[in-house]
Image (cartoon, rainbow, N blue to C red; front, side, top):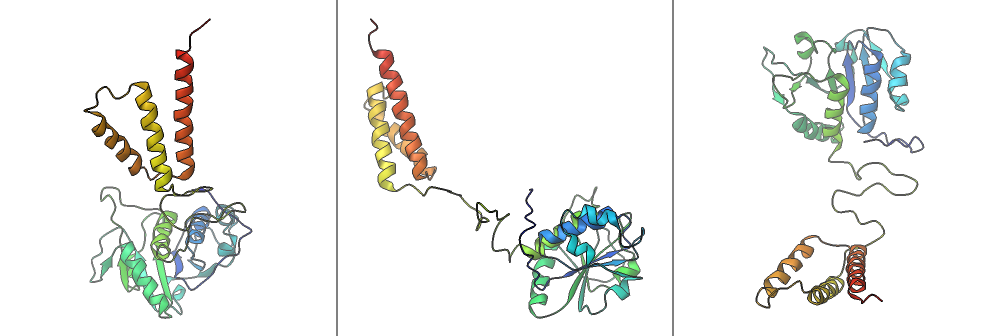
Length: 271
């Protein structure tokens, strides 16, 4: 789903911070930052990135989320990176031999929203590309987040994991869907979209029914008077279920008229 308008102001409200523990590739940091920007996350902390920092590849891979990459803070260890944080969510796909509550990303989203609304600082902790977080690092967290994935292929890369957690954090507070452009506002929600038209009125729909019935009569569509009422009800039910727009009614009536004219021309005697 493409769509980035760099002219729009960034809305940086209170949000969970993202901690990447020992990330290896700058590209992964950049794509994680891009995923953060999609869902209103804007603070990233890095624990001992393997290829050093700053990293030009991270900036290039962020695809416009440069303010997140440029604002990244770097720490020597996970404990230091959690300074000022009240509650930590550790993400992992593997079972851990420790007593700690496990929740799904959806549950984590609800929990994060409640905690941030109370003024708490919360952090989402992500592990290395190769093997994730160590048990010692997870022991620093308050809770484990594990996604419902295919157990035979459960590994999720950093950007995907950040995207998943960011989506669950943001989805219930998003006021619109997708991107706003200079031509059109962002969608205000899911459902049938009717740009430049409106739902058809019953008068318009019934007018179409009368038009269609008349032309079907003229064309000899109804073979017997006995079957006609049942066939008409089926036709009406079909178009009623469609919840037609005004413009669609006009199009259908134009279609019927065009077919009728063609039919009449074919019946005209040739000289």
